[in-house]
Image (cartoon, rainbow, N blue to C red; front, side):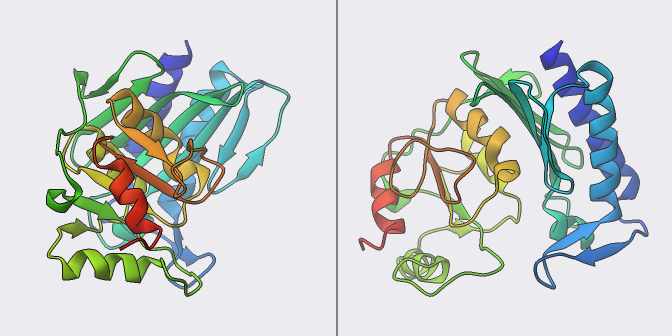
Length: 257
């Protein structure tokens, strides 16, 4: 029932995104002028909530737009109804619904759905990861120097030895391919299926990465914070790789050039 509800809720959110995409909808800003929220974010969230509450009305919910809906349940739904809102608002089809399910403090299931590319990623703890029901795994790229990477930039950051621009500059000066898609959930899923060899980002929220995190791990990859420690969705920094290039990437994002 838990898996079926997750799949149904994710598809429900995706259907709303399809209805609004490239149409007329309201857009407003949150923390900065480019930190956007659209009518589609809110309506997708409503559709997702409806499915979850129909089956599990007492479950804890953490969602980007509504925040925490606290209960005493040991199961928490961590929801981003529209990851990649800026892309969506500009008609760029790199955006998705992302939902992770946490039980007793551990992510046990995740789904990421990009309805515009018809890609549905799913993982369950101990059972592997899939893309459109076909098993996926991370790349086998043997070294960081030849890896294809992806990153994201926060809306605000403090200047430091390893701020996002300095790390990006390091890779670019070496001729390293580094992409910036604008959706952390999709970045993680594309690491999981081997399109990217590694992903790093300086500032993420739980809803950005809860689902993608387990999808990468179940595809055979490694996910940590910037210190190389076990990743938790409740801290900001994240590095996800095929595992082989993980330690060298940790060194670079810590300014060890």
